[in-house]
Length: 430
Ligand code: HEC
Ligand code: HEC
Ligand code: HEC
Ligand code: HEC
Ligand code: HEC
Ligand code: HEC
Ligand code: HEC
Image (cartoon, rainbow, N blue to C red):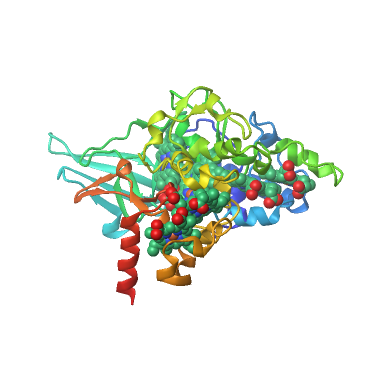
């Protein structure tokens, strides 16, 4: 996917979350867009000359997040790689590029088992709607229509769409499923009903965005101020306003006192940076968006006990708990998520690259299959030692049954079924 720097700026700038009427520059998301178009020349010019990296509106945000574009000049390589990652695009304003589903012909409809209910997705003047068409008892056609305003999901497994009602955020009933390339019932939604009132609470946005002004976890109210879409660098390094201001005039040997380097933290603290979003919903102790990299996560979000079992779910996949059970983790001091994942580069699906990271600690010869398969295994340790597993927690209901995504097992181990599958595949390929 081609993502321009311009778009990156546009998506991550702070915007006032004020309520606005539906026309003529309607609803909140549209207002964001109006604001962005006006704000852009100033911001990109500032980013170009390297000074005054953020507008006063951004720096006065209570959380002091400034967005990745503000890091670009001083860390160009990190920035260029990062904007191609799923983290960067996991929440965006709805537009023709960000929405993966279709709006024309048959593909614009979703039929249900209930022959009195069908959905239509429609596009008008750069705005995108989901409409439930319902045949009522009165023998008349009723419509309920809401605008798709925020897109969640890069689109690997799928996307879910959100809309504002005043200062409250809700989930829309129809999602997009990448495996079929079609509209589906949103996960957990029963087929044949039109549900528009499922609230989207702050924990959801805490995992899928950089910042939303929210007072408590229990309500879907974001009335107080501002939000920033996409997961920025700062969710892993801490808010960057002070760092950027300081470094702009600091001497070369000043170090970097105002930003967190995960590599300087203990293994536990380093993994907790990822665990804030990759170990399940957790038990919430603090207020939303108050955890900062380097702090003890359990004081904010405490992983739930059941997450130690292999109860994968698309929003957690339980990577932290599973990895911790691996011999690789238990018998080394320094294995972290970053040993295999570089958050500053798009790496999705690159089996050879991930396998090269196993070889930081292992030799090919250490593998019991090497005598039989030889060096041919060098490009793919993954399919045998971290095989994909069906995620039964995140099924979606369709007219033809249940669909489940596949997630890789993070308990690195020896899986006879996966080895068998690999061998059968190999034999079939010959
Ligand atoms: C005005 C230039 C400038 C800007 C803007 C800037 N940085 Fe830095 N950053 C530096 C310098 C200089 C260092 C210290 C030298 C080094 O280690 O590379 C540094 C170091 C870092 C480090 C390593 C810290 C350490 O202890 O070694 C991280 C992480 C970092 N920056 C992240 C960011 C992020 C995230 C942003 C945007 C929110 C950002 N920087 C914006 C100049 C900048
Ligand atoms: C603020 C929440 C958050 C933090 C912090 C976070 N992630 Fe993620 N991560 C996500 C979300 C959400 C996705 C799904 C993005 C999508 O596809 O829409 C994701 C996706 C990923 C993916 C899959 C990427 C792909 O292209 O398929 C990897 C790998 C990953 N994260 C690793 C990490 C690691 C390692 C860390 C810590 C260094 C980390 N994440 C920190 C929320 C987070
Ligand atoms: C605990 C953190 C967390 C919470 C809470 C959470 N998610 Fe996720 N979600 C993730 C992670 C991590 C992934 C990525 C899994 C992967 O890449 O394999 C993900 C995946 C997704 C995907 C699929 C992304 C893709 O590109 O395939 C969508 C859509 C999504 N989440 C939407 C939501 C919505 C909407 C909510 C709230 C109503 C929510 N999530 C709550 C962490 C979370
Ligand atoms: C998902 C979490 C995550 C995101 C997002 C992220 N980083 Fe990092 N970053 C890390 C981790 C983890 C390390 C430490 C890697 C290590 O120790 O091997 C790191 C290291 C760094 C370093 C210091 C080490 C080095 O190689 O110079 C800089 C500078 C940095 N990141 C800048 C950025 C910038 C700028 C962005 C956004 C454009 C960004 N990071 C986005 C997790 C993240
Ligand atoms: C930071 C170093 C490190 C990395 C990276 C690493 N491992 Fe390990 N691994 C170890 C250590 C240490 C052990 C335990 C001693 C041994 O068996 O060699 C181990 C054990 C294993 C075992 C034996 C498991 C068991 O339960 O008996 C397998 C299989 C394995 N690793 C495969 C992998 C694969 C595949 C990768 C990459 C996806 C990988 N490792 C990455 C350090 C690492
Ligand atoms: C030993 C290597 C290794 C370590 C350590 C590791 N991962 Fe992974 N992870 C992988 C591989 C390989 C994949 C499959 C990636 C792909 O095909 O794109 C993966 C995939 C993922 C995904 C995407 C899930 C999906 O559906 O594809 C997420 C999210 C993720 N890892 C998070 C983490 C987190 C969080 C940690 C730390 C707790 C971690 N990983 C530690 C190797 C590792
Ligand atoms: C075809 C499936 C397959 C592939 C590919 C594969 N392995 Fe293995 N690996 C196995 C099996 C099966 C065992 C157990 C063999 C035994 O006990 O004789 C094993 C054992 C291991 C062990 C543990 C050895 C011990 O006795 O503790 C390590 C380490 C290992 N593999 C690493 C790797 C690495 C690194 C790669 C990629 C370069 C890799 N494997 C590729 C199937 C595979």
